[in-house]
Image (cartoon, rainbow, N blue to C red; front, side, top):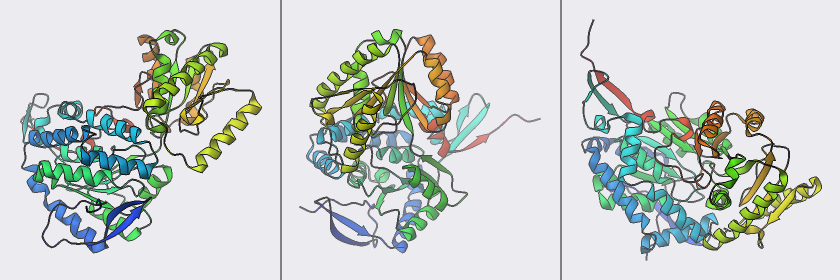
Length: 460
């Protein structure tokens, strides 16, 4: 059986870049050895496919994306299962966690989700098909996407890179995606699935794989795309910003921090400890949406009780979602943090196997980032309102907060958190599973890519 490809090129006569067999952490694969002129040719070919894509009705594109999601939801299918195994091998996540990630991503990417995301951002999705009556304008509106969307994706959440593909196709733009060298297996397989379902829709997707250090290829990539969607850590995003043309429209999704808040009356909410544990376990806490700390409006003694409840739930959930392989650097970071906490007198509660989870109880109310890998801090505080004041220095780094409180209290806290730049609030237990409707980093991710053309009939 031929090894899996780390690339996907829609069929084009004459485009045959050199391919070599390689290994990534023991997984045999085929790599395309692209030269700058190969990437230029591929980008031009993808731009040429825009005409065929824009001629399709949006309903057909949504149907193809829906079918692809349903295919990948079947995590027992041999192709899907084989990809899950490879992703688990190269990322270090357990197979069960990768399987859960794939299902989470695909279950939120079905036709109703895609249609709702479009309505949420552009109103009437039919404006992507043709000039459509706009009752607010009294005339008609038509929306068009970029000539070519470029995607630079990350590897911290398995299957998440398909989101860039979907968003590009929903605005009827071909896309050229640079997959992560840390996890290059999922995206080519997803793109191939889409092409097999509908060659016209799937033919507008290409996947390449090369490292950030390949400056010649990166230069061509950034020069050829018309719109850039980029995920990555602070350094990776800073480097891309520095290298991208100054006039290239872009959406950058860089590193952010998450946390939770539980009010005094929220402590009695159903299954609170289980939901908090799930937030810290999902994706081994690698997602930017994951909580580093939960602020609890209660006395330290009650928070210690809650810590034991959360640890108990971590052990139970860990049976279903085992922890992944952790690098030595993480083990050292956790050991150093536990030693530091021992000197402060903080309460530390661990599971029978610390890899399943560590929960600390730390007074003071400060936001201290966690070493991650199922390491959650609980901070007893007198008032959640005071916590918001102490978060001011982290403005711009905070993204997601779980709030367990009455509706009025939650809205009041939410208004203040929104002013700090947070762009997602949710109940505990939902931190790692955003919907397609979320305005990622506070931006309208679909509408941001569109150019609107209005036909106005009112004159002076």
